[in-house]
Length: 57
Image (cartoon, rainbow, N blue to C red):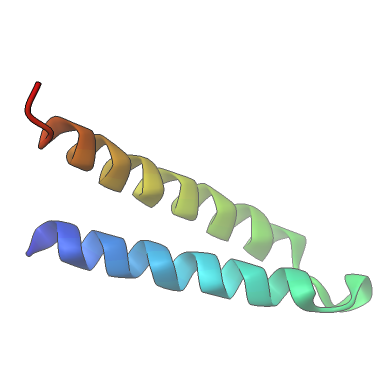
């Protein structure tokens, strides 16, 4: 359940970051882009690590 929430949050973060990047340059908020990219990277890394740990070797 927890990983489902993290995955959904990551999805929402990346969509929001994409929407911010689509805006014209003068309307973009650089701090928001940096924050969203950092949060998206962390949540994506958490999901990826969790998926690799669940693989049987």
